[in-house]
Image (cartoon, rainbow, N blue to C red; front, top):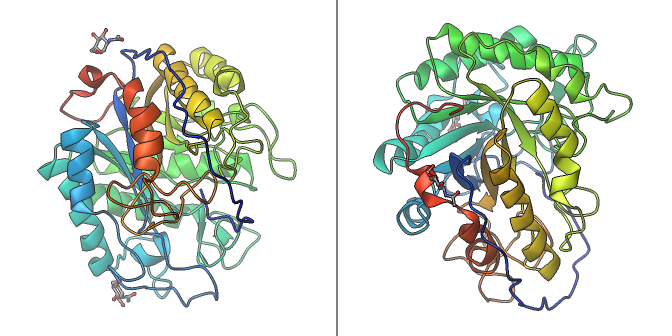
Length: 386
Ligand SMILES: *[C@@H]1O[C@H](CO)[C@@H](O)[C@H](O)[C@H]1NC(C)=O
Ligand SMILES: *[C@@H]1O[C@H](CO)[C@@H](O)[C@H](O)[C@H]1NC(C)=O
């Protein structure tokens, strides 16, 4: 997900909470939110937002928010974003040389979630499978492994990066490795090669945890079996060729419910179940599982109806094992991470732009929380497909 500069719509949403049949299923093992903020503060002139300043231009989590979600909402899964150009400074490039300051700030957030609170954490390099210029994400930066771009990091460097990162979390059973956020407009075969390199690097360290592999087209579920970008092969043609010796890799899917699947409109019009039907069949045919690591909606009545419909569909189809809603995070303030400008974020304690309750109250508590089968989230041990 990326910030869209949208015309502000002056709307007073009708706060009619649609009655939703809570159809909790037993198949969702991981449920929670994105914690977005580690990638903030880079929009604008290339380079000016790097490296940034912790607590000023970027931040990872607010511990009290994680407390609320774990202790009150009883969820067990957080997707925590970071920026690869901060983890691997441009001066040394993508690979095994990390900025130890940024790494330790990130590791503190992951350890708070996993060790202190006992939840699972999805490690998310929020980079669109690009590296070297995040200033206009998702479109800036060289595509990793693009041999026609002399400035591009190589697939081998990407493998080195993941080998180093996994080695640092090899003894933490509660992490999940997300290979990259939303690849798009690139060769689907190259996405397969980069995903495979990441898996090879992670497994070379002895790490056994769950891995999430993204596809093309912003890893959209609705377009999984379709051509995306200029003329890029459907993800379905390549992503079933991944090999994980431990068979502990799931597909990483993003799915928004507005007209263009961007998550930038406050009205939901897309039916999740029928849009995901082809993906569901493909997962079944290939004996694969998926996690929806981004979805969301505003507090418009259309979204208050279609968001829980999507979650219930995931609960009813056992190829889906988890989800994280977009997004909480310490730095949203009254800004909205998705789905129209006025709803605010999912961060408890923040407000919407009119000073009223934000999406934590009007969306999360209203229609997302009731869909969760909390007893199915009570799990421990190494992150896995079952
Ligand atoms: C909730 O999850 C538990 C544990 O997995 C399962 O036994 C139960 O059937 C689920 N409840 C519903 C309503 O699906
Ligand atoms: C490493 O990250 C810290 C924290 O953001 C920053 O202050 C420092 O300048 C960075 N160093 C390099 C070499 O990028």
